[in-house]
Image (cartoon, rainbow, N blue to C red; front, side):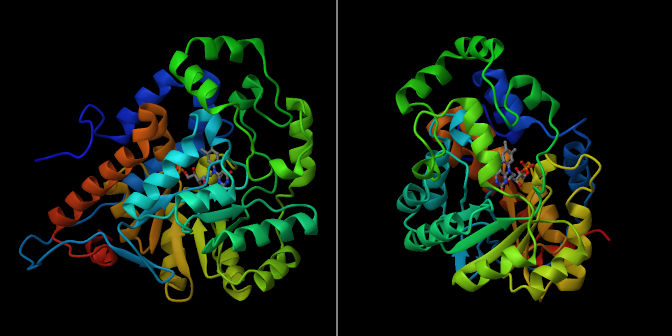
Length: 382
Ligand SMILES: Cc1cc2nc3c(=O)[nH]c(=O)nc-3n(C[C@H](O)[C@H](O)[C@H](O)COP(=O)(O)O)c2cc1C
C-alpha cells in the first residue's frame, strides 16, 4: 500500500510526540493542556472511544466516499480544522500552513479572532473559503467592523462562541505566564533556547501578532498591557441581545460553537443559527463537564433535521471521526491534532495530518462495508 505521508509519523499520537520534542515547553503545554486536573480532556477522548461499530461483511456495496455536503458546499472529507488562538506562538506560520492545506484538500478551516493570521490573509490563502470565529467584542463598532471585514473577505460561515463566559483555570498556563495578563518569565526564555528550530522559524516569520486585531491595538504594548487590552476588548458572555444584531447583520451561515445542552440547541434554532458545533473547547473550560459525545447523541436524536450538528473535542483519529459520525453528527472538527501535525512537521504538517485522517477514515468505511459517511449511524452498536 502506498502512503502519501512520511511513514515515521502514521498516527496523531506520533505527531504529538514529535511536536513535544520540537516546541518550547510553555508552547506545547498551552496546546496540549486542558483545565484544572485535565479530567474533561481525558473524558472527551475516552468516551468517544467507547463508541463501537458493527461491520456488515456480506452487504453489497460498490465504492466508499468521504465526500460530505455541508452548507451547500461539497467537502472532500467530513472533518475540518477548529479555530485555535495564538497558533504562531506554537509553531511559526501555523495558521497559514493549515489554511493552505485546507484549500488543497478541500476541507473547512476556521480562523480564530485571536490567531496570528488576519481574516484577509486567510481568505486569500483559501480563495475565500475560510470560516471565521468571532470572539464577541465589548464595543459594537468593533463587532460591526469585524463583521464587515469578514463579509468583504467572502467568509462563508461565521462561528460565534458561547463556551468562554470566563477564562478557563489552567494551572500550567498560569505557571508559564500565559494566563491573562500574560508574563514572559526566565523559564520560558530558557525553554526557547533549547528549541533551535522553533527559534529560527520564529526569527524568520517574526514575533507572532494578533493579525486580525492589530489594527485596533496601540503599537508597542507590553505583554502585560496586551493581556489587559484583551480582557477589556472581548466579552465572552453571550446572550440573546448580543446574538440578534449579529444574525441581522450577517447574511452568510451562522454557527454557534460550544453547545453542550439540548436547551442551548433549542435557543440556537430559535435565534436563527444555521448550525451548532457541540464542543467543550477541547476540555479547556469546565473540568467538571461532560464529554461532547454524550450530549451529541442526545442532540442529534432530537434535532437532527432542524439544524446542522457538528462536533469537536477529543477526536484524534479516523476511527474517532467515524464514531462521531455514527452518533449522527453532520460534520466533525479537530483542534489539537492539526497543531500537533504542524508542530511535528512544520510546513508539511497540515497535509500530513489530513492524509492520515482521510486514510484511517477510508479504512473504517471499507472495513464495515459502508458506502458513505452519512450511512455510518446504521453501523453503530446501540
Ligand atoms: C490551544 C488552544 C487554543 C484554542 N483557541 C480557540 C479560539 O481562539 N477560538 C475557539 O473558538 N476555540 C479555541 N480552541 C478550541 C478549539 O477550537 C476546539 O474546540 C478544540 O481544540 C477541540 O478539541 P480537540 O483539540 O480535542 O480537537 C482552542 C483550543 C486549544 C487547544
